[in-house]
Image (cartoon, rainbow, N blue to C red; front, top):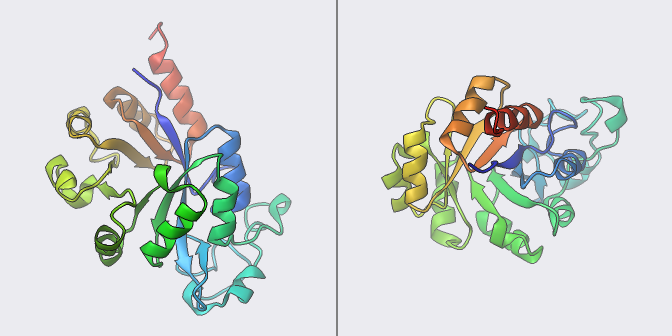
Length: 240
């Protein structure tokens, strides 16, 4: 059995404010394989790394992201809400975030509101496209990605497609499971079909991590990296 590759969900989000350069640096410092981040577009068409539809939760501002200009977004403090030591962290522009990733970490770009072709081209410009992959909860964005940028590796959720066969029919590269859809049989079937297997889990329940290790999932898209590595080490040690 091999250790799983770590995908840091919104960066090292338990140690630094999510979707910031600080959380990216934290992910790199802990040796993560990839960083997961979210992409939104400002009122004046600038791409940013931001999860929520509004800036209220993770910045000192208020309002819908899509209603704010880049000048307004650039003036926000995206770190103080997490801790005073992160005061002054900005909402990263996507090009700045990707420049910080280049040569250091792979990228998983979840598109909230953005043109997938623009995202793909920006990744390519930074030399990141070969190891990058994308997903969106917006069905129209998923369809547009398939149609317009077929060289942009795509992930699908098992809960959306319902079977490995459907995932391969859609031309997916990565199949992501959640705690309630993960089984060793499905993981084995996906691997046999040439798909990369991944689990998303934002919690800290050891039993979920134990099931992932037993199922031999290849990638873990998680927040609690320290607990997962501890569980994994215990289960893979010769004494176990």
